[in-house]
Image 1 (spheres, rainbow, N blue to C red):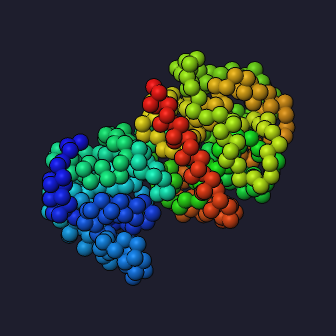
Image 2 (tube, one colour):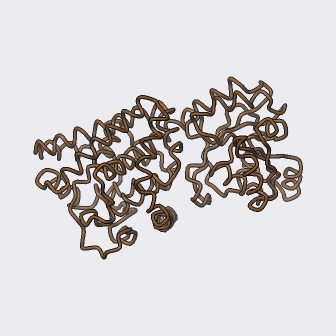
Image 3 (cartoon, rainbow, N blue to C red):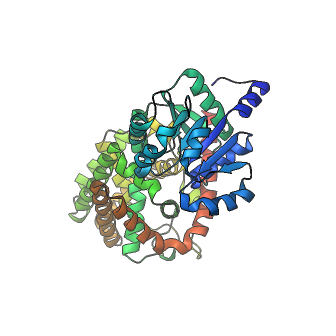
Length: 446
């Protein structure tokens, strides 16, 4: 990144306007951070929200100019960010893209860049440049040190440097990719992870269980599962639907996750312990075999025990088959994915889930105990059946490519857990903060 002097930076801020089309959670996060850094910012959302948004923003972000629609934004702004749902990117760019200011730069914040870039190339004038971005975290996470992907698709170095200078106020870790690389990596690090935790939520819902109220869901690993699942369901459905449905790489991985879940569960109920053990150990070698004996585990049970949503004191760890974790590592193995290759582009939730999987697979004796339970102990057999069916449901929903069906399934389960979200969000934030600090400490030691 080209570092500007204070005088050059102030001149740039005085002459450039940043426009944001779509002032949802992430759009508002960007608007706030840019405005606080001294940039001129304007934006819009759906026209029916105009009056409500203008009134609320007058007190929240008085320096951000709110317009009725995207035509005003595209005619005024020098850099325009489309912060909209992935399913709507084509429709919205087709409306506002042709009116983009001559010489402006355009980017997007969607989770799938293939459909975003396709829309930009189809509807933007040839004299408009394209520099897209993607903050790999949710709107409630501190942007400092988090991965921020920058894609110089159709732009001069000068224009790219301007966008990078603007984004520097987020204090994120910049990652430079093509849009194709972005979509492959986000699928590798997010698709299966989301499928696992969405399936957990649906399985608990279908079983009419609040896991923090059920004694068998105790222990550090269970705390992490519950907290992450609740965190996902506390967000908006389109955050996950966009990646799952519009990204072709994600389809393949979600299908594999459902297949791995079903095949591992079949081996469990057929009591084929040796075959199950062989398959899981092969997956362990492919995914974690490179770590070496001196590798320091990111997480441990003592740490995760601190973050329980249960109101009763823990009564010790409940032995568990951990089918959801076995299936995700098996999926990575079947797809030849080594998640550590993409750690620089990982979301906070992915790092936690990778840490939990690593803890299960690399703690001496824990994996073997898990497999013994899965074959010899029927305590979790019904739960594992529910989970297997839920994983297949999500895979089918994604394969249909139906956003409305995805939304109905997501919000149906979301409503079941709604009352727990404030406390789960608070607990999840504390867990993420602690774990990210451990990541930082480990990186500094290495």
